[in-house]
Amino acid sequence: MKAVQYRGVGAHPEVVTVPRPEPGPGQVLLKVTAAGVCHSDIAVMSMPAEALAFPLPLTLGHEGAGTVAALGDGVTGFAVGDSVAVYGPWGCGTCLMCAQGKENYCTRAAELGIRPPGLGAPGAIAEYLLVDDARHLVPLGDLDPVTAVPLTDAGLTPYHAIKTSLPKLTPGSTAVVIGTGGLGHVAIQLLRALTSARVIALDVTEEKLALAREVGAHDAVLSDEAAAAKVRELTGGLGAQAVFDFVGAPPTAATAAACAAVEADVAIVGIGGGAASVGFGTTAYDVAVRSPYWGSRAELVEVLDLARAGAIDVHVETYALDEAPKAYEDLHAGRVNGRAVILPNG
Image 1 (cartoon, rainbow, N blue to C red):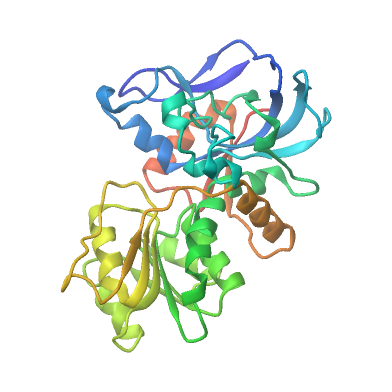
Image 2 (image 1 turned 180 degrees about the vertical axis):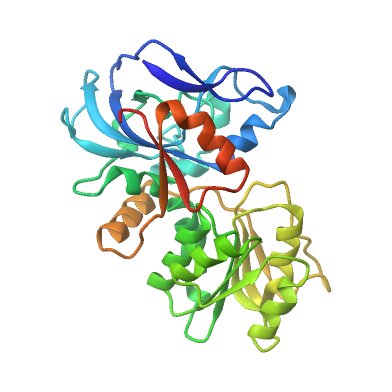
């Protein structure tokens, strides 16, 4: 089968031919219908050799959807032909966090060498994907897998980040979204669907700010050194009750902290290498800074239900499997408006 792999440190992703996997006991083989392309992949491909926690080559793609092609011994609850989405942050299944469905916070994954597909285990940008356990599958039903597949990360991750801050996003409150690409443009829709907060979007180009307005942002501000002051101006000097940074670079993390009101939440979601400074006189009083990761299995079900209800709709740009290397080039260059999705089987 064809797959897109990162094969050597510093190399570009390439389309290769690899053996089609066969499911063992408890496993499920999917024929991939859609796979998302994410900045996290680019972050992995930018790491020096000593920072990589897994061997290469690696089949990319941690957002996956497909139809069940074969079931391993003992698998129940699914049939060949079922359309499913893949829950990506695999865990051990037995620790305290996994018992709550929070496999994104599995306490034993590192110890046991368990890695997500596309981030250590073979990923979804291939004609077939081997899923380690049926519990990591969620039925899609009548949802379009092409627009639903980004929800497994670009929907689940912002939903998890926002859900914790919902008590602060009351009428009259403000939420700031920094970075309005794959995750950020979904976050704006989630904030509009789940809260009555005013949503202010920050990004570096007018094209991305136009998408932010299109999906529901009340205000759109260029993300530069004056952005935090502009947010405070728009909020009467108070700042925002919740700030979500989907870039996570040093300048955006600093902006996120500077936008925060008294008792606000700041979530640094992006993995751009930044960190928010916290301390007396540095941030507003009682600001809480978090670094959330992905989301729980139950939250993925909730996100897909929101999509089914029409509350969120991902803007996607599609590529054939052979075009996947170009998709990564476009993403790195900022030419993808929304989420890039690979269609491995046409």
